[in-house]
Length: 114
Picture (cartoon, helix red, strand yellow):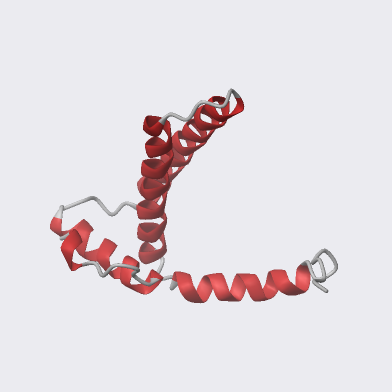
């Protein structure tokens, strides 16, 4: 299944992959349940980042913790892509629209490069 996903996939390709993966693995598609699972994965990511930060503050790197952050980010992305699919949201389009709005909203905070 993962072999079907192109390297450096676009957001659209990632969203399409998640649709196929959920069907293939016969995963539930309850919207609220998926949102709850995303929240759980976000909490796991926060814990992994905290652990990684604590290790870095004493100048010791632990590959296991770095891997944990990496894995949790992937889990969050999977659930985020799925929730977007459940609500028929094109994430590329949504990101561009939101950033266009933020460009206006935060224009006074943007540092000018000279």
